Length: 223
Image (cartoon, rainbow, N blue to C red):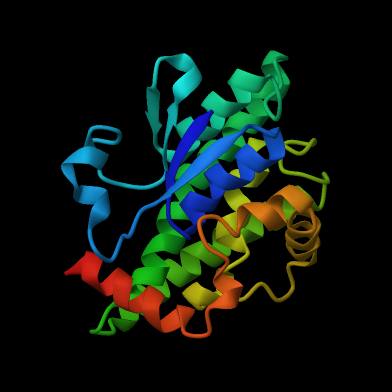
């Protein structure tokens, strides 16, 4: 059994989608980011960086894993799925996983902050991060014009990237003209495990005021 500590964010969805795809039994522990639960002493014993997601593998002597990319690798290696063992194929997955971790996530995350959350709008910052996010999307689009999934076969690289790109409009970034990226967003999003994973820990579609509450929660974390 895996204990999953998470919240409804792109990084959080990486872990829940992976758990669904791999068919691993898990118990959800929702972390209220707006109330600062991620900074509690209890949670910091699991993730000293105070961020979600984090997991605890009960089958491995309550072994904790933090950082979303590390969680994906751990779960893939635990099950022998979604991460090839062939060195070249494995490297491809890791390259695109790192592309998300070092590029798409940080750049789009900053676009979210300056475009959506910050009370003071700074045009230079908004334009800088939106432009860079769009550039990274164009890299993805070129790659996906050559292959069905980022590393050829469906993998943890897709699981890491999709939860971010699917909410591009939240950062004020459009994907017009990126037909291969659009095709991939729809293809990955149609997978049953993905559809279930983005309902963990809550189904955001059931909340009419989710946008306002998300913004309020994010602003609390920025203050």
